[in-house]
Structures are given as structure tokens and as C-alpha cells.
Amino acid sequence: MNREHSSILYIWLPCQKIYPVGPTYLAAYIHRKRPHIRQRILDLSTIPRRERQRTILDMVEAFKPDLIAFSWRDIQIYAPHGGDPSLELAFDFYYSRDMLRRVKAGLKGLRMVFTYENGIREKLHLLQKTIKAFPDKTITLGGGALSVFSREIIRRLPHGVIGVIGEGEEALLAVADGRDLKGHRVIYRENGSIISGTPANPVSVGDIHVDYNYITSIFPEAASYFGETIGIQTKRGCPYHCEFCLYPYIEGEQVRYRDPEAILREIDYLYTHWNTRKIWFADAQFIPGSAAVPHCTTLLEGLVRRGRPVEWSGYVRTSLITPKLAGLMVASGVGDLEISITSGSQKVLNEMGMGFRLDHLYEGCRYLKKEGYRGKVTLNYSMNAPGETEETLLESIHSYKVIADIMGKGRIRPVIFFIGVQPHTRIEERLIESGYLEKTYDPLSLNPFSIRKLLYNPPPLDRMIAASCLEAWGEKEEERGERVMLALEKRLRGE
Image 1 (spheres, rainbow, N blue to C red):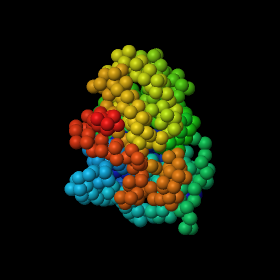
Image 2 (cartoon, helix red, strand yellow):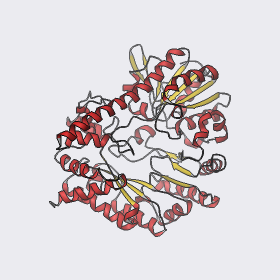
Image 3 (tube, helix red, strand yellow):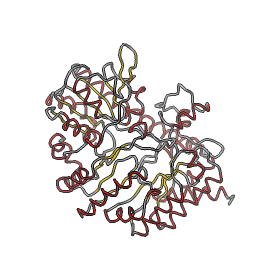
Image 4 (cartoon, rainbow, N blue to C red):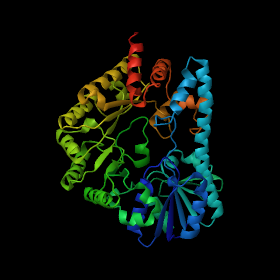
């Protein structure tokens, strides 16, 4: 660990194809701070499965890096991803009254479990094979998966692998320089023990300026993203304490802002050279609080001045939208939006630490509508959250109707989530304290008993909600959320 490195190979482990923001920002940061270091990015998502290991070996042989930095984006299952039936199969298996349907769901679910486990095994296998083939290389592993499941993953890897938790820029710079790592959020095994560094100060994201011309030169697979949506961070950190959210743990609670002019220059380059027409602002929240409004305003005003036909989106708290901000959002090309409303009950929102008022959320929607917003809005509801009652469920259904009345029914799509319990969240702490989870539970376990607990849907409302979901999930995907709401409302009202 105590040697300087003159070259870095970033390897984006396979996942659903999405632009590798993390490796891009790491490479940009290192290039800015240590321009003499040679770098290369390898995106395994663009490589057929059978060719991935050989591709890594060939790349290492050709590029000869001193440091290989793997990035593992996430481990997230039983969420309503398009084309992924795992949540439906789980509900069929646990709640269906039709025994044949339960048996079929069990068999299909077993195949899904194997698929997930094989995905985890493949990534570990790629790491292990690379380490074995090149024992003289320094190996790091970062990304969302490692950040959330750091102890579980590091135990499965050989000694010497350095896990980087959360923001990686300063930690990777320390590794590259051969400096001591105890002052960084790292984790590794040494002499049979797991060693963790002490968290340092958050990364100053004002120092992050992405030279996409340079990135193009070190990222051969970049061309596969030309014309596609590109993620750009405008800020990092989240000041809220939502019970189920990991952003404050990964990025910190202090919100730090990038230079709006630097962001605008990046968008200009991507528009001109990568044919980028859609941008996803990959922030925890685009408007994380009233203090962020001036930064958002400056950025959107810059987009309006440039006049490029670029559509942007991100996670937006409509409760913080002002009339001026609504006008700028529409004028600057805001597209479809995704809003984590969670619940239509202020009582549940307060208990979950969501940090916003429903009347302000409705107000923000009205501002957008008044300014001529014509995009679609996805409303993410987490059913049966702590504090949920029949009355609060009816309030959630009512909230959907209110927003649909404001924005137009055809523009609102409710999506039904269930809280997936994950390490380092407040809900995990609460459930361990209550005895719902054992202190020694395995968050990566995929046995049926663990899945049922980690897919949080406790009694007494579980069966009513599940029955409504099972009734609605046979419909077209875009109509399922609304169908769940209507089916649930009938049951709650005894119709």
C-alpha cells in the first residue's frame, strides 16, 4: 500500500448499462491533481459476459497499470425495475391464495435468486481472477455496492484489496500517492482482521471539473454512450434523515456544490461531441433545501442562456420549487420527473424523517403546471412504512388524486415500492432495536425467510396491501400503480 503509482485502470463491473459517472469523476479528479498518471477506463457492461475476464486480462497486459480500481455500482433487488418480476414473484409466493400460483412463483423465484446470486458471484469471480493473475498490482474496490455492504464483500475478497466507502476521490489519490490510508473511509483485511479507516472531511466537489475530451481519450467504450442519457453531478450530500435512504451515509450530510459554469461547459461539450440530448442530474436531490435554490437558479439560467435543446431530469423535491424556479425549470428543458413522495400522510412522512410538507409539495406541482410543464411525473410510494394505518393509506390514495388533478391524470404515474431494509439506514437500526431483525442478520442473504423480512411489509396491513398488488400487477406496467391504489381503496372502504 505504501508505494506510488504511475498508472490506473478503472474497471466498471457489469450492471444494467448506465453511464459510469463514478469512474469518470475519479479519473477527472486524479488527472486534475496528478496529470502525470496514465489512466484508462474499461466498461464491462458493454462486453459480452463470456468475454469479460479475457478482456480484463488483455487490457491489464496491454496497459500495464500499477493500480486497478474496480467500481461495483449496486446490489439492489426486489425493487420495481422495468422487466424485473422479482417483487411480483415474491408477493405471489408469500401472499397468493392460489396454491398453484404460489408453486409457480416459488419455482420462478428460485431461478431469480440464482440469477442474483450468480450476478454477485460473477463480480467476485472477476475480482478474484484478476488478483490471482496480477498479484503485484494494487487493487481497490469502490461504488455503491461496496459502500453499503462493505464488511460482507471485503470478507469474500483476498487480503490486500482496499475497499473505498462513499466518495472515492481523496482516498484513491492517497492510494495513488502511496500515503497512509487511516484518515480515509477505507476497509481492508490485514492479519485476519478487518481494518477500517477514520472518515476524513468530505471531498471538495468544487475541484471536480470533467474534461470530457480527456475522458474520451482514455475510455474506449465512451462511444457506446453517444446520443444516450449522461449523468452529471451538480452537488453532493443530503441534509435529510429519511429512514430508508443511504445518501447521507455515502455522500455525507453537508451539501457541497460544483461550479455551475463548469457544469455548463461539460454539457456544451457533451452536446457538441457526444450528441447528448438528455442529462440526468445525478444528485441525491436536485434541490436539497432552500439554501440550494440560488445554485439551482444559476445553473438553470445558464441552460436558458445557451438555448441548447437538452432535456434534463433528476430527483426533485417539488416542495422546494418556487414560482421563479418553476419557470426556469420549464424554460431550461426539464423532462419527466421522479418524486419520492413515500406517503400521502404527513404523520408517516414525519415518522420517516422525510423533511417536507405535503401542502408545499402540492404547491410546487401547481407552480410547474402554471408555467406550462408538460412532462410526466413518477410518484414513488413506499407502502406499509412504519406508522402506516388504514387511515394513512387512504391519505396516500387521496394525495395521488390531488396531484393527478393538478398535473393531469395522464401525466402522473404512481409506482408502488416497499422499503428494502439495508445496512447503515435508520430503519435498520429501528428494526434491530425492536427485535424484528437479529443484530447478526446477513443483509445479502437470499433465503425466503430473510427476503420476507428485508422486503418490509409487516402485519396487520400486509395481506390487504399484497392482495391489492396481486390484483393490479396483471395490468399494463404503466397502469399498475394506479390499479393498486384503486384496488386498495375498495378494500379499505369495504366495497
